[in-house]
Length: 281
Image 1: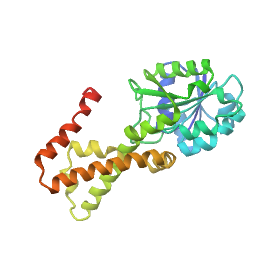
Image 2 (image 1 turned 60 degrees about the horizontal axis):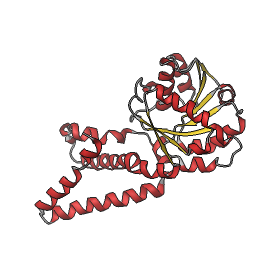
Image 3 (image 1 turned 90 degrees about the horizontal axis):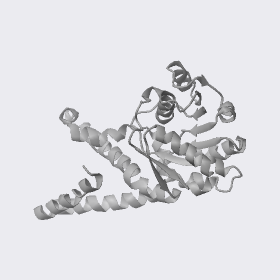
Image 4 (image 1 turned 45 degrees about the vertical axis):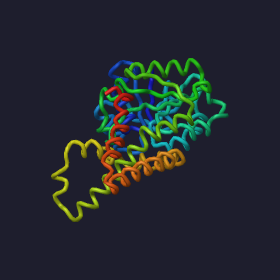
């Protein structure tokens, strides 16, 4: 199996690393618009060869598109224009509705399998590639009824090699769900980081007081704007809906605090504690 990876950042690099390590791919080709990324990926063995964009498309049995969602939206029709009936194209972007809608009636639509691995870190670049990052995580496959059945099975097997658990979603429902469990936590983390940084202007030692709770909550704020601005922009309506609900909950707590409503705060927290049952932790 010859694999082409377009986009050699955290996701693309980690996929290349483990799909080689677990012998799914015999040869891995890589393309990135950054020559630094391509050179590093080749130097450390994430890929066998750094190729051009067109070479990545023409030579891969499976083409993995691991670039920001705004780029996927633009590139996917062009990639499908160039492939043969024996190739498979997979993207790993964090939103799916716009991409799937853009290529819904493309003549090669059946060769495309829309995917979202629910895995990652706040780091970026091929030097952040991690072996085992996908183990035990969910892989969401969207609108598979529009894809060739054998292509879907091949891609499913690829992610099973990475020990991922497969889930199937409609692409627009997917975007609603990830707004809650993925996109909104990043918004909260960015906001908390800005809040503390504002305070830090006046109190230089505030970060010396930061404990594990702060570190784990604000970790996502280290994530890059080049990845997350396109996600928020593409999933704007869903993120706005979740954001409005979140603001309401913050205002609820503020009112309880203002009114010295101890019983109300206890109930607020107890209600939130129900998440432990949902997460089985």
